[in-house]
Image (cartoon, rainbow, N blue to C red; front, side, top):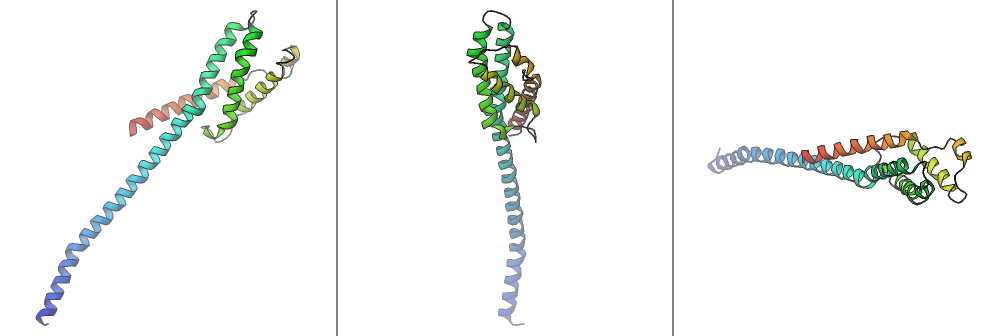
Length: 171
């Protein structure tokens, strides 16, 4: 082999033996960075969803239900019941309906719980009595307040809250 050819072969060998490991390290580092970025993005999206569930769905529903339950306990059977029902409970139920109908995509379950639909039925029928007043026919129609609804909301709220706090700690 001539001297220029030997030099050329040596130079190529040097470039390949130094460059290949550098290329391999760069490739592995880029793949690692992309994987970390995907995991960070996924965690950010999960945290945003948990935050949205608390802020726009489970949080407001949970607080409205606690508040109206408290009003109901205090006012039921007293001379202020009808007024509390018209001015506090019905408007709160309407807010709950609106949240359920516009933010249902934020539920934790795969399916809409039956209690959600039972609450909507209860609230809509209940509201229709506003102009004519409540009477005993209302109680015969099987549209009383579904207790399971508050339990399902409380369960969803606690689940969303614990999920949110866990995701915050993992950041």
